[in-house]
Amino acid sequence: MTTRYKKIFSVFIKSGIVLFAFWFIYNKLTANQNLKSFENLLSGLPMLEITFVMGIVLLLMFVNWGLEALKWKKLISSVEQITVWRAIESVFCGLTWAVFTPNRLGEYGGRVFFLSPNRRIVGIVAMAVGNIGQMVLTNVFGAVALCFFIYRFADLDYRLFYALMMLSIMFCAFFITFYFNIKWLNGMLLSMKFTRKYKKFYSILGRYKKIELLKILLFCLARYAVFSSQYFILFYWLIPQIHHLDILMMVSILFFVQSTLPSLDLFDIGVRSVTASYFFSFITDQDVAVIACTASIWLTNIIIPAILGSYFVIKLNFFGNTPRN
Figure (cartoon, rainbow, N blue to C red):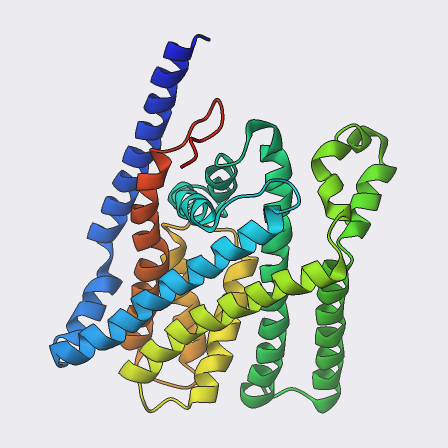
């Protein structure tokens, strides 16, 4: 393929991605009754108060994805050195791809296309390590929160509850042990003949030392704290009668359940709403407020970044290096 045709084909792909993403977003936003419920809830509140609270939630969105960009830069540092701004570009670009792909798989493609062509597959493996770190925290905090939830709201025999606690401890220990020994996965892949020939792509798994994995996990923990704070702020603002510890417990369960279900970002709002409505029903009867808060976080953390990321999609170069400033 000549350079001219590569450019034409690249423009065609990028235009298709952006148009497809905007079409999906537009259709979902216009049909979303939960966002209208959120708007109705805010209609009786002072505009200054609304601006202040939603401004904080929006600012936390940028902090959240900024931390993800720093984590991505750290993950890929042993493969390719990228600037912080380049990491931010790739993260937001990936969010645009993720919005219309199952289980956010498009986020991998959107992000690694900002790397050199011969390092993109390695970049996917590196990104997977960061996602595993985020999953570990989601599962650990979720398992602990579920134990508290069952203790408070389920009438279980004490022996069954103790068995459940032991199972949760083993569950958490497994994920933590696996994460800090991610190189085991490298060894397993090397032991299989049909995967051994691809070792240049996944050998990065053996390069991460425990101290590096700890630093990455701290980025994951910071992100977890940020997006938990977004939920906490909205729920405590609109349903102040809920105890703050109950909010944290329910939010951790919400993240945990969401992480176990296959979903599409644009339709994930339905999963989030149903999950939040069920669990929060144990501590409040403000079902409309719960669903509306969940919808507003979905808009802030998923839809707005996906729209912003469409600008960075245009900068992609599918057939070579993305131009560096």
